[in-house]
Image (cartoon, rainbow, N blue to C red):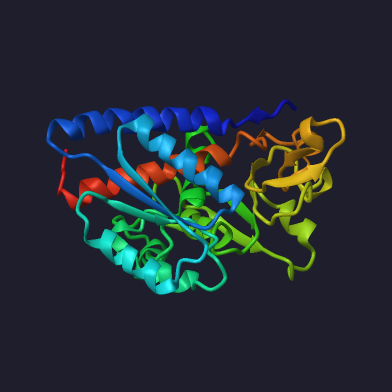
Length: 297
């Protein structure tokens, strides 16, 4: 069996083209989607993510601002800044880049963001709306990206048994909530597995669609999946490889070479789920702009 390679780069490119066209139409009626990104400290990975978010805004025609704060910024100073942007009508979305320095409570900061501007989809109000299937919430970007990859690659989850490896609040739980809804691109039967799951391989072999999000390199082996499975690999792990440039390379949570020989379709790492996350952030910001301006077009 030759597996279909689900390219996140290609799907993200298609969605960005749709967003770009919508932004052109919005600007004709005086609406410009706006996103502010706040980063505290010098975390190298966060710096890369923030730069990519700014580039995406420029590419799509969004108004954007990046606020860089020193690691010594106090919690109160950050909360006051969030309050400022909550009131600023120029910006439809606010994103505070995680992780934050240890002296700042991530929970307090995320709670302070206006749920109507929470384009990351982490505020409890949006999480609650996601669970009950409300149409007017912002879905978390990576899980929403997983759903779009399935739909746009012709692997509709409706009626399928989806097994999710991982129960994080960032990916595992929300992707299960999204795919179990009575809605287009959902309607799946979902099982969540985690570190305490017994007979794990027995369950993963039952999956029509397997979503791996546990942060363990090459964890899913060929004997853990059945023939014809669709695999979405959310994992991003850096491993030592003397043959690779810089001596390391990125791999997912799935043993790609072995599993791809049995799979009907599979996402690569890199180039699979990764490109979708920022793209779905842009989609959420566009959605927020439409809501804030009561745009019905």
